[in-house]
Image 1 (cartoon, rainbow, N blue to C red):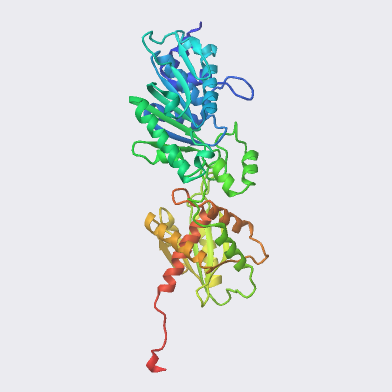
Image 2: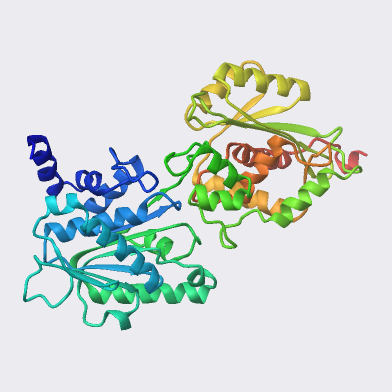
Length: 460
């Protein structure tokens, strides 16, 4: 055996990342992998650093095989380790058990841990030759997370793969029951100082993984297939073409599958019904914004790099009856001078006041614009963001908005805004065009609250 090989094996005994590179192979080609993907490195580091983690990942990101590698490594390090594979169903747990067995039968595994030879193995349990003879518990067990199938078992580490299922998230009662069952198992079976690591796809905002992630001491992290700009984060499994095909299925499916954002009835802020009303109003001939007062709002982006956000621009016109007309939606990557020129041109052409979000570099852009046109800088914090969302939601529900569609259907830019609204959540990133619309909503209300000029009644 070469010195380099010996060094790799020695490092793998104490370094989980190095161990994973030795035993993992590409599922498509069958060839050994050379390096871990960034999201896989992140998962491993969190598992080693924290004892309570939740990882929400898109399907195909390799979360299950990585969980199997973790179990095999822990058992190889310490023959007395008692690990449990917990899933929403026993069948799902047995699938992960098969992956553990595949890893532990890999030639490199026996080179790294020559004493951790499998001596007993079924779909439900596994033990190795290095297990102490006095230890009654097996090294690895696979089960659904219910007490009846784990009677008497004590656990040092629980790896929970796909504990949330379609059936377990369908109703509030089902979600409550799943949560209580899981807590009962982990509170009574996990040894003091033990660890619980949950990996799952995004199913529901109130499912078991998300509930656990909100508990004190738990660390939740998302590993989406696409970044905020729609670029693949794991090209080996999610190509640009696959992401585009998923996006074509609609914003809700795209958010769940590619962004790990579950969109359900409890997270929807802007329902499709109120959006449809605004679109119908925008196609109604007798509703016309002509003669109204216009406001331009912008959510600016300072950089124009490949991975930077876009700047969002909207123009809203208010008529005498207080109806709001969304007449312009734009998004693009402009440098600060280009963005200022565009906003000033729109402001002058429409005799409009310009409102710019002033967080970060936005205040600088607002200062550039203010030298050439009426401009107001509006900061954004969580409190006024919620107030803007509530105001826009209420105004949409009352039918006061018209999303202008002169051709009878939404433009490409309007469609992007509608997609942002369909998946909006207060806890997630807000789309640039929707951010601009929320700023406009506050600006419109501020304009309406100003004292209006007139003649005193007794002077008429």
